[in-house]
Length: 262
Image (cartoon, rainbow, N blue to C red; front, side, top):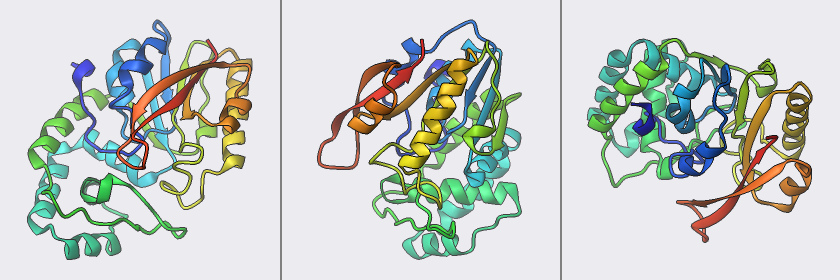
């Protein structure tokens, strides 16, 4: 079932369209799958069955709370989403952004999913104070039936899966584990997802973390932009070119990199 499962959350930079190019480079027969930049989770839902255990994480607490709410009580989240769909308008969208409930996990998840799904190009953006700064997309309604279908199936796949909030450096994989890292891309998504930009210093910190994984015998893969900086940063590792199509920008078809130590 997981081979055709679609994520419940649309996510710019997600791997729905290029998962088929990445999956052949994902090992089998290992113990735990780690994904510390979870986002929409498209790759996880496709390759879950390859691993015995799974540890998903992201620095975005709103996102991980949404995953756990969908895992535990998808019906309650859907009921709240229906309410948002009935009230949906440009004015209501702005209101939800300024009255975000950080206490009730179900309400938090429903508002987060509503805002991301109905934002322009489905782009999640926050300001430096972690408040939302997303624009409303006016030409469509909240796709409740699609959300219901995907959330129900994703909830089943998330049973027994650990989903936590934290920096990528907090994970502690072992020698028989695999780590897939999909950070904000260099020269592409630095300022979208978190209050603090994922700048070149962060890219270097991530690369140093990948070096530590390699030294410890842990297999990994990193997706990132195909830029001279990234190519130079990861020289010595295996760099595979992946062709992808972007919704945003003047050049819809681009090449990105999949970096592995295998």
